[in-house]
Image (cartoon, rainbow, N blue to C red):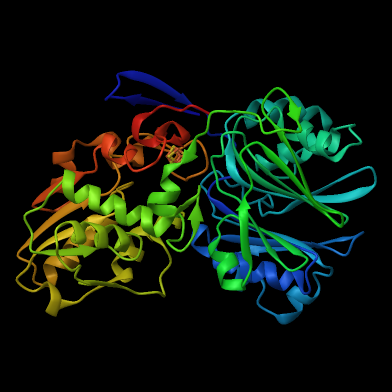
Length: 474
Ligand code: SF4
C-alpha cells in the first residue's frame, strides 16, 4: 500500500496494491472444433501483442479438463508438438498475460486457473482488473487458502461456492459482487460461458465457422483463422455456448434479466488509441480507421512546423497517416521497427524497457537527413520510448524534431487492467508539458486536447478516460 500526492488536483490518493492479477491480457476460446487446442494456440498467437510473459490453454473432452501453462509467449509454452496433442477434446480456451511486480514467484499465477464444483472440474480466464478484489478475497479467505495472487481466483471461488443449479444464476453469483473490469471465459464439461462486465471496459468478440463458435479479445484472431466475426459479447451479457447452440441473459450489479439492462458504459479508449491491433474491430469501430481520424484531428488541433511526418512504428503509423493526410503530405517511413524485439510497454522492468527501445527502432538516414521531422506518437506513458526515438532521429540527420502525441497527457494510473499502476512512473503526472519536451529532447511538443479526443467517439460518455482525467467511474 502506498500514498500518492496528486499535485495537479491537490488531493491525497490512497492505493492498495498488495494483490494484483488481471492486468492486460488476452483470451481466446474455441467450441465444437477439430483440434481445438491448436486453434486456441493460433488464436492467442494472433493477439500476442496484448501480453507476452505467460500463456496457458485448458481443453475439455466433455468430462475431463487438460491444462498447460507457463512463462513466455505461446510459442515458448507450446514448443513441442506433443504439448498441444495432450490437450484433448473439441473445446478449449486460453489466456495470455504479462508479469507484474506484485507477482509472487512462489505462486502459479498463470491462467486459465482451475477449480471444481459439484464433482466437476472447471476453469476460468480473465481479462481486466477487479478494484474490490482485496475485500472479496478477505471475505472468501474463510473457505480455504488461495492458491494464486490473481484477482481471478476470487471469481473462481464465487462460482464454485454458488449453490445455484441454473448456469446463468451460478455465473451471476460469481460476478454480481465484482467491481472493476472483466471479460471472462468459463469452461466445464462441454459448456463454455463468456461474460463481459456491465461497463464493457474490455472487448470480447464472438465468432463462428460452420458449427464451431469462437471467442476472442480481438477480432484480428478471427480474421487470420478464417472465422466470421458475429458480434461483440454485449456489456452485461452472460453468453452460454453449448451443444444446444448459444443463449444469453443479462445482468447488472442488482439483477439477472432475459433482456439487456441499460447501464453506463466505460469502454477503454486506450484500446482504440494504442492497445488493440489496428486490424481489429473494437467497440464497434475499426481500430485503424479510428487512429487515422485521431491523426487528422491531431493535425488540425496541434499543427507543426516540420516538413516530414514520421510515425513511431508500429503503433503510431496510422495516426501518422492521418496527420500527414490532413497536412496534405505523404508520411515518411523514417523509422523502421525491428520485429525481433517485443513491445516495450509490456516489458515488466524499466531497465529492460529502455534497452529494448534502443534495439527496437532503425532510423532510415536517407529519409531523415536535413529534414524538420514531426514525430507522431500514440501516447506518452513513462517517457521510455520518445527520448530514445528522438536521439535516433537526430542521429539520422534531422535538423529539427517536433513531437505530436495522439493521446492527452496520461496523469493517472489505470485501475482496470492496463499496467500503469504507479503514478510515480507516469511522465505527465510528474512533469509539465514543457518539462517533458526538454526530457524528450524535442523542439516542440503538443498533446491531443481532451475535447479533441472525446470528439472522435460517437458518445464520449460510453468511454473511460480515467487515466487522462482521473474520473474513475467503474
Ligand atoms: Fe483504459 Fe485509461 Fe480507463 Fe484504464 S484508465 S480503462 S487505460 S482509459
